[in-house]
Image (tube, rainbow, N blue to C red; front, side, top):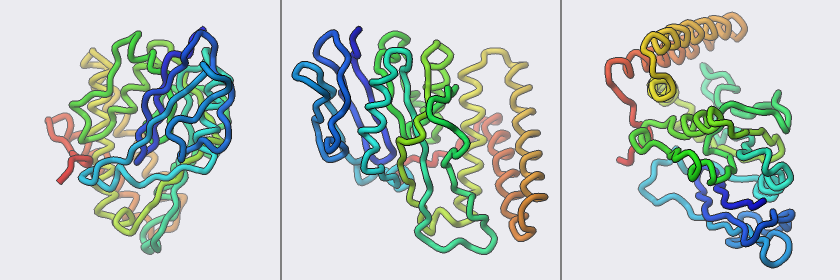
Length: 275
């Protein structure tokens, strides 16, 4: 078969234009191509994946330019994809948070931790995000799926895209070794920033749910369940963690629920809109 085209994304880096020149899949990526190479060759002549990378523009919000990749990230991600193609169409990996400032006393140290330690390489997922993923562009060609421009400033369009891809039968697989790092600065340790982020999560949950489900009754049931689970998880955290974190957990849980209600009345939180 032919490996027609791929896209690789990591927050702060844009990857585009990957493809093969003939009917045979490419071989393993040569170490050293990595992030420094603009056109790392895969195997023999005629078996090529070409990559182009570029930083986000200066007016892009800082929240979209805060990740870096492990030295072997690209090699690991592409090699895994090649080894499991064509059975697998999407490969995604973990994001590990690196805090560059001191935690406030009211903030638990795992509040930003996105590294899914319990997930094993090869685990099949039902969703993915553009913070660390490689996917076959045939998904777009065959289904017409696109990232929704209407959601570009509020977030959630990547999650929606990959859920829809999974619903079409495309396979999303986890690669634990393809690691990227997220830098957490002092601004993102402020409770006000976290409250806004969790409210935005509630808003985008509603927007994604609307796109995925046509029936109003099912949507309402999902919204009610999401609010219930959010409050339940908040209570569990309060009971398990140190009492000084109670205000933080209550604030974030309530913020997510308020975000859901905001979206239901037509309000948005445009976190990614340039100022």
